[in-house]
Image 1 (cartoon, rainbow, N blue to C red):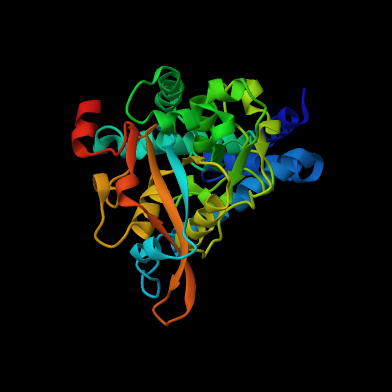
Image 2 (cartoon, rainbow, N blue to C red):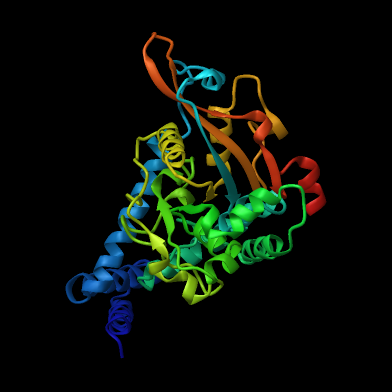
Length: 368
C-alpha cells in the first residue's frame, strides 16, 4: 500500500470511529474528521503530497483573488499615439506574425458550447472532478489552465493535416508554418495553447529538433481561473494529456527561459501585449504563435490604426483551431506629450484568414 492510500485509509477509519459517539450530524462529522486526518498525515509524512497540496491551495487562492481584484482586461488607450503614425516612422521595421488560436478547451465546453441551461450542471460536474483531483493530490486540473477537450484535440490534428495538403492563396504563411528555417514558434504557458501547437505542427516538429519558446507574455487576457497556468516558472508546460505523443510532450522540446510563471495579480493585459509585440519584432524570422482569443482580439484592438477593422478583428474572436496572419510594424513616433515612444501597428491590409479565420456568427451557425 502506498503512503497516500494509507493516509486515505487512516482518514476513513478515523471518520468511522466518530459514528459511535452519535454526533448531531453523523455524516458531516465523519467526513470532517476523516478529511482533517488525511490532511494531517499528508503534511506530516508525505513531502511530495504536501508540495502538491500547497501548490494547489496557492493556485486556488490566486484564482479567487484574480476574479475579485484582477484588472487584466482594464486599461485606457489615452496617452498612446495612434498606431497609424508608425507607417511614417524613420526606423520602421516589420514582422510577419501568424496567430494560431487553441482548439476547444474543457472550459469552452462548460461555459461556451451548448444550451446555457446546461451550464450549471456542467460546472457542478467540473467542480466534482476538480475536488477529486485535490483529494488525490494530483497536480492536474480541469478548470485551472484548462486543457483541450476531445473536440479541441481533433481541431489541432486537423490543422496539421491542412498544413500538409494546403493549396490555397496564403501559401507563403503556410510554408512559414511548415518549415523550421522560415519561422520561429512560440506558445503561451497555458496547456491548451501548447497542446494545439504540438499537434497542429506535429509533422514539422517530428522532422526537427527545434525548441518552442514558452512565453508568459502570451498568457490569456482575462480574470477567469482558466487563464492561470499550472506550470511553474522556467519550466515546460506539463500535464499535456495522452492526446499528445510523449516525444512531443517532453520538456526538451521547449525553451522556457521566458516563462516567468503566472501573470501579475494586479497587472494589465496591455503590458503583455506590448511585451510580446517587442519580442516578436526582434525575431529574425516570421513568428508562429500559439495563443488565445482575447489576447489576439486585444492585440488587434490595441495595434490596428484607429478606424481600421479588417474582418471584424477588433470585435470577433479567432475560431478554435483557426489561423490568422498579419504584419506588425514597429517604429519610434511622437507621443501625445511630445516625447519619443515606441509604438506598433498592425497593417490592416496584411491581415489574412489562413484557416477558419474569425468566428463570425455565420461561421458559428455553420459549425453547429
